[in-house]
Length: 308
Ligand SMILES: Nc1nc2c(ncn2[C@@H]2O[C@H](COP(=O)(O)OP(=O)(O)OP(=O)(O)O)[C@@H](O)[C@H]2O)c(=O)[nH]1
Image 1 (cartoon, rainbow, N blue to C red):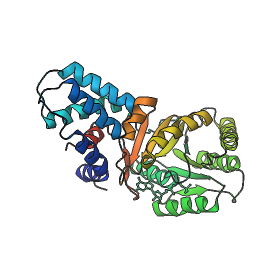
Image 2: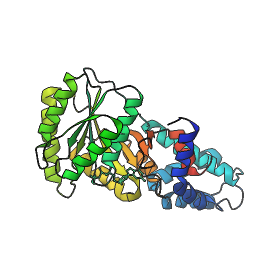
Image 3: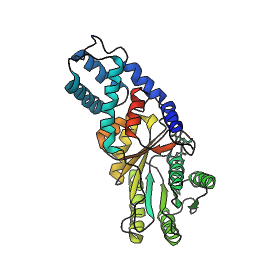
Image 4: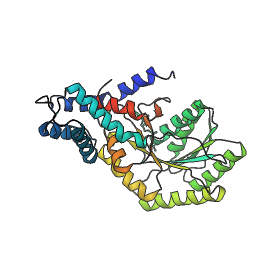
């Protein structure tokens, strides 16, 4: 993919529904052309109904009041000011997933409910690492469903990486064990592990992840280096609830939010940043292999606020 404008355009295209929503909600709120309490109330409401969450909405309102109360403001300036405050919330959590583990491999456990876009995201992430010339191996740790293993293999074939897998219903920890050995023996930089996303049975999921951790720990006390939770933005508030649940079952170290295209609920990214402060590594804005990019807070803030 050619970098720069094309990704920028796709990002704007992908976030269009979210930008339109916030932009529409902010349109017409500048009543007296001065930033007064009524306008600030309307801005706060607009942010809440655009899924940014009450905490971020309040923070943005307070910052706007602090900097501009009583001053004249146009609609465009208001959107720019909102974008700046969104960026201030997003900047501290923007943290690309970097391969730094020594010794190699860096083990990245990917968790999330079925359908969140986990498998696709693993392939996209592998592709991003490949672009930086890292050697990547995948582990099909979701042994619960044959389809999950098959789907990971299809993606792996497409991008030309190996997958370590076991039989359907097999022990995920044993797949992970084999994968770490293979990665170590072949000098792989990043091992990305798919896991089952059966949230309806928290105990089982917790036990399974604990077992994977135990096996990993035996081979490399630092592993897993990353535990990345994949969230589907179209779930809105429910995506945030998933952070709570997964934080209970696993030591989540970062987030990737998918499906920011085709939803007006992209504001949930800001709510997640404000409420949890977890690193956001990347965002997904489509189904294609290069539709995942590291998270650029300033650009995303502008896109969400609807200013180009
Ligand atoms: N529009 C869009 N679709 C996405 C994105 N990421 C994933 N998808 C789609 O979401 C669907 C589910 O993705 P999967 O990767 O299969 O999700 P999963 O979490 O592994 O789900 P299971 O395979 O059911 O465990 C697929 O149709 C993907 O193409 C994205 O960023 N945007």
